[in-house]
Image (tube, rainbow, N blue to C red; front, side, top):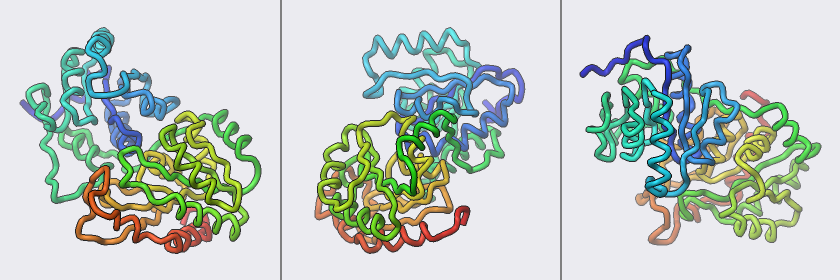
Length: 346
């Protein structure tokens, strides 16, 4: 079995995207490489609902299949129905950016003729073309993680540039919702776990400081599970923010971030969305690895403190959360001032 794929005869491609918003955004350069290598092919992306929303009106795909929410097997009947629906499409190639064995099972049951991906989660026997997983010691950034898998199969020349797009109508909605002036987005949540979250009172201190110094509006962003965090920040602030946590769709969040002048955030999905739109970022890292999941942009300031236990990649800190406690509000303010003072494009 050879690793290379034929340059012709592949007309319909299924791409199983990652389940997390941030990972999906970081896979967009690889998706662009697929589009460039197979310019005449119809590309269908399959993903859970929130991730699928990122790819509406996206130039790298033609169709979207929305998969069930929840676990890898969100009800066997629904999962089987998805496989049957995909089988009717007669895909020539399935590209698995998701690492789980369930992605390979889905592609196999859908009778995709060729199934390529990393040999992860014990799924090698389900793949027709296998890529060895990169050496863990390399601490490869996620953008290159997806690109290297494709290069293993001869799909190269992908430009490592994130790509998301909003429609003109979505951008107009965001401008109308925000109104005039400069807006700074504060994203205090993180879906993976509480250990990734900086403290509400420090976000509030930074937000008030920037509102006073720059006369800007403060926009609070996040999902339904982060409403309490937003309320805590709002209660601790002297100025009045526009708190839209839990009140926006993924597409609306994208549009709002595209109109922001700066984002201050934990390591999170919205951080990567903002990076894709070129929004300057102050990103606070604690238990996660800034070398593999940092915002893929040259307009970001990474704030973290070195500790022997970091990055631990734990959802909940088993000790005293020292990696986050060591990040001061003044440090975040300092980095925010630098980015706000820098000319656009620098």
